[in-house]
Image 1 (cartoon, one colour):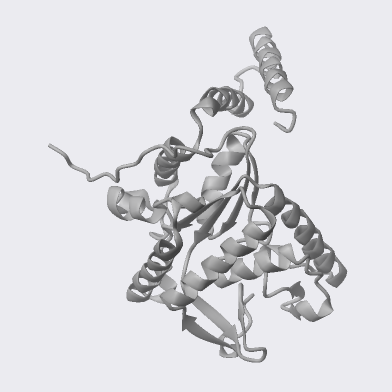
Image 2 (spheres, rainbow, N blue to C red; image 1 turned 180 degrees about the vertical axis):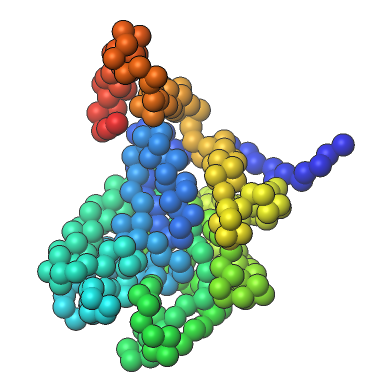
Length: 316
């Protein structure tokens, strides 16, 4: 008896992620779930340098500014609730100092430009098709920063608008990096503040738009994070207490699927070795001064050194 339907997967035939790969992850907060796994296993990656970006136009603007080496000035930031903010960035980048804000933004433009040029894999996770238009400037923002809602109009992007934005993202990336594998996915996080029906409509627009441009022969791929959550994990026990975000069990399950498709078999042994070191670091000894624990620490250092000898970028 089968009590679950499962999505059939085949391992990616070419350009899988290994320890020589460099991965850039952009988009919804689900990016951080996958990114944290890549961090844990010490893959080379950069996650959301401008913070979480939920909708495609925000990601497109970030990539445009990055490739054009946009320099942020005082005209691009504003002061609100005792902090400086930028409509292009998440509030985690907000700063008490104007100079500090601008320095941080421009440093991130530089580092992200380098990462886009050097990445072997770029993962873009879309969260919503709902956007907010700032009425004073008639521009769509990445983050409202708790500015009064009356200053924005809420709009739903059409499928063709999203598709055009994704095509622009691809063309921008290809203008500086022709070889990178570009992987789109839709976040399984439920945006219920938009409304139940509105959230489903939004996700449908994103999925339809992505499938208009996905073409594995052109190194444009889709990974069904949303579909795994909605179909294989269709139970509230796989959500956190807010009933919106996948819990750790769900994240681990989706990561396992991602790993089987996108992580090279050649990397599995190194992942296992890294996992042993990570668990060793997290180990809390009963007696820190015991001879057994000192021997354990010595063995752990040897394992770290062996990994760092093969992969000099690894830091524990």
